[in-house]
Structures are given as C-alpha cells and as structure tokens.
Length: 257
Image 1 (cartoon, one colour):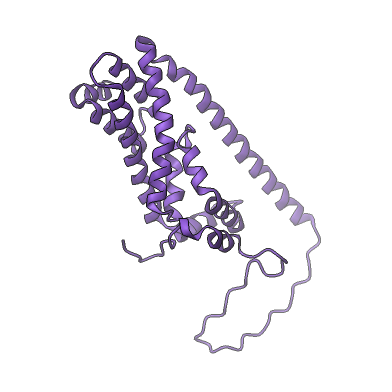
Image 2 (tube, rainbow, N blue to C red):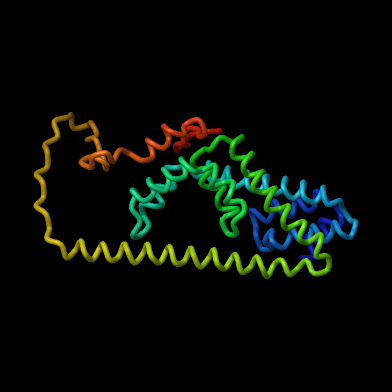
C-alpha cells in the first residue's frame, strides 16, 4: 500500500494510472483498494478528482490491452490444445463457449470490466478471438470509466473512511467466486454422471470402417464432428459469420504481427 501511495504522491494522476495498470498484470493489491485511495488522495488536494478518474481509466485500458495481446499471442489453436488435455472437457464445450463469446463478446467486455475476478480475465478471450482492437479499447474504456468513477468518488466522499469500500467489494467478490465454484462443481458432477451412464449403457455395434482409397501419402480427411446432427453446423463458424465485422482472423501457429 505504501508503494501505491508513494506513486500517487510523487507522480500524481499518472502514478494512480500506473498502479491500476500494474494491478491488471500483477494483482497483489486489487483496484478496489487503489481506486478509493486515489479518491481519498484527491480529497486531500494532492491531485484533482478529474485527474484521478481519467488517469486510472487510462491505466485500466493499458493493463487490459496487455492481457489482450497475451490472449492474441496464445491463439485459438493453443487454447483448444490445452482444453483437449483437460479431464471432463470436450472440444464441443470449447466451441460453444467460443461461439457465445463471438456473439456476445462486446457485452462481455463492457460488463466484465465491472465484475470482480473477471475484470482482468475478460481481456484474454477477446485477444484469443482477435476482437477488433478499436472495439475492444472502446468498450474496455467505457466499462472501466464507470467502475473507476464509482470507486474514486466513493473514496473522495468517504475521506478517511475510504477503506470501508474494500469490505463491501470483498462481499461482492466472494459472491462471484462462490457462483463460479458452484458452476464448476455442477459441471463436474454432470460430466461424471454422464460418463457413468455411458459405461452402463449397452455398447452400440461398431460401424464398419470405410476403406481409404486415397494415396498412401495423402492424409485421410478427419470426420466432421457435427455430421449426423441435423441443423447442428459448426457453432463457431456460424457465430463468426454473423459477427465477422467485429473479429479478425484467429491467430494461427507461426503467424507474426
């Protein structure tokens, strides 16, 4: 905390922005503490209220942009490769999640900037899906501006009691974590139950393997995972076609900026 206070006292508004930017990447001190402290510092006359809000918002955007590029460098293929190695996770789950983000990514980025725990993490899938940088910056800035303004003003008007904000935000953060734990628990229980039911179900007769008539050195085409399911085309392809103007081409291995 002394480090953050020192930044604000030495650099003023830019110091508050730097602290918030670092919080996105190295979060030992959450923004829910930095922002009210910036408001309190403004109430003491060490920096203007407007400067505190603007610079902390700039810091939020800079930190989010860094995580965006982490996601972009990671790339869609690496994410799918990692997901494929996780127990109980199917690539169809990844496809549905990706399709949802392609359809609702703008709203996710905007509202995600106002939800504890997800505030920083939401930037990574935006990078993985190569959301247009201008779109990402716009909605990150808008969401961050609302969130930062609320907490900076709280610290400004609470004065010496600015630290009480942390306790209220802690409750909200615990609720978010609890919801995540329940959701993950439900997912695991459901998958384990389905796996057990599949083992108990009578095994279906194996279909005869179709002969491959291509040349030995030709790769046999992979089966379409959505074949045999009427109306169940690739959800990612559908979502990208619908919202293609908001997203670039996913990064492939070996691509360069």
